[in-house]
View 1 (cartoon, rainbow, N blue to C red):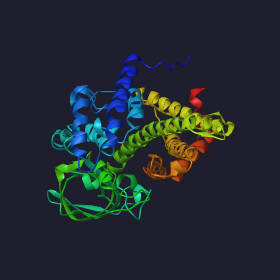
View 2 (view 1 turned 45 degrees about the horizontal axis):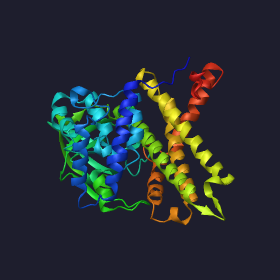
View 3 (view 1 turned 180 degrees about the horizontal axis):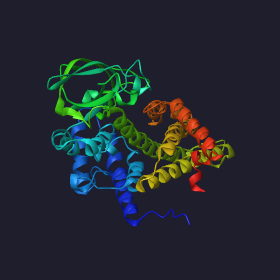
View 4 (view 1 turned 90 degrees about the vertical axis):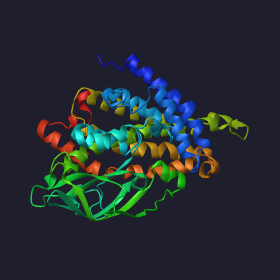
Length: 408
């Protein structure tokens, strides 16, 4: 028997978070401005903490809710409906994945100096890995770190360091051992900001224009110049040569979090679309009663159904300590394209209204395009998934194990 029953305690926490998002976060969006953002967020965080809603997947001994992967997935699929959702519970990217990295790899001193203020919501951190020349190939990074006495000296550049403009710390990956195997060449360093050796050249303009509020939310993507950045040896995280491995583990969670939030955003977009088609009458008939419109809604419903099943299966594997790399890669691509399809359909069903800025759909549409690039472009993950299919067939005479076959 395959049991899809969600434990009662997980249902309860999902309902509690759903209520908080719908009744607190979404109403707060309308009056949130650059001028009052700090005040709005502080009030939401105070309410969240009073209800025991804080750092969902962080262990209770560190001040979090201690949720396991399934419950966290359910919570994240609610938080993504509001741009204030994750921030209100201090589970926003890129901070959340870095909290995980510090929990698993940080020394006691690093946890005290860096993790503790992140968990308290007092500080934010960015992740500086990507470089312009290397792109999706993390092993192509050229930023160097040379040991000089009790310090490392870093030099190079970083590209698309998300949230750097609001960060108090940076997690920087650099090449420490150029002559060893490529996956062992890199190390990761904790850097306190501001620092003269870590300079933001600019916030890169994208198809989703920067706004003052968006930057405060952490929506900037910065070009960084690293020049003679001095980092004490004790700020080396996880050991020399472990940067790539930690980075992949960190990105694995980030990809899932993006997917969970994509489900939430797609659901909110579809709800807007259905609400519009019920009220909109053309030629004496509701849009919702037209066959073509129902086909469009049905396609969106199918995409959301598949998306939820993917995430629930991955959460199940995570809770049971199973290898989920194959499913994670497939889901990353699917979920990024799913949210694009649903939001695009919602815009189409709204007509010119959807294309306007009178609904949030146009803003969401610009933002979600990045999902097919962030944490690895579609093509890289599809290449890897295709390789898994070939390897599975060569090993077993069938590729089923690379296509969800363990479900059968």
